Length: 349
Image (tube, rainbow, N blue to C red; front, side, top):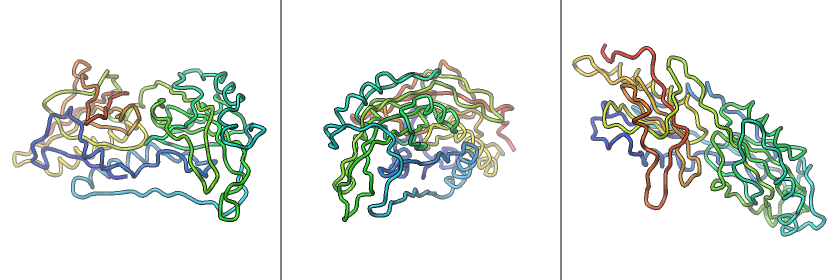
């Protein structure tokens, strides 16, 4: 993952008002984040570690102030015509795509599925699964069990939503010798580091050789909980929108991927440390004494965590930025919270 931190005091540049989104920074993360499980996957362990990501964010900020950094994603493959695992779900008598998509058992199961306590149902019985930057991991279940999926989410760092669905998968890994094998049904539970929305459910399947993977009975569930407290900071303080003020702005940071206030904490502290090592001639420097973290979405599809850094704290009355347009695309603000450094940095060596 690559991201950029712009700090006016260091760069000596004329900045737009801090409430304006930095689209150059947002675009810099495009294409580097895994947005869902590979089509051949039946399991993808949740490996996100919030503490490690916070430390990585701080290190990345320090490096960003003098150079650029990047990360690479990896994905695996299956041996040709190898037997595929799982396949515990029901399937229609006729092994065709239309029969799968029209199978009444999938519709009834999705419509009657229990909504776990502490969650709200975001969508029901779609023929597509979620695809977004905030993907955390995948587990294949033996039954269409929303409670089990919820338990997996609750046990995973930063998980705030899940998507459960039936998927038509091949019994063998399609290859030249077996381009269109017989199908079975997998029941998949994917976890997400943001809310899930109908607009994000855009993965309606794909081809593996001649085999057509499709999806049915897709339900999404989201929980509404604040981010964790952060060591050295007071908060979180819930805001309606993002902070919109003309002064005391130190910089911003965008992290494509799961919503993670800890990354903003790391970015805030690293920015202060760097600026303190490079004070002005009079011994002053710009410290990050407060940050505003929020989930940035494009057309209601989560993009990642946006951090706005300030040298003083601001209250709820200044949280008036709810989003902005970029051409026909609307970038919206949600899950906006403030964290205040305690004690405050004096900003003088």
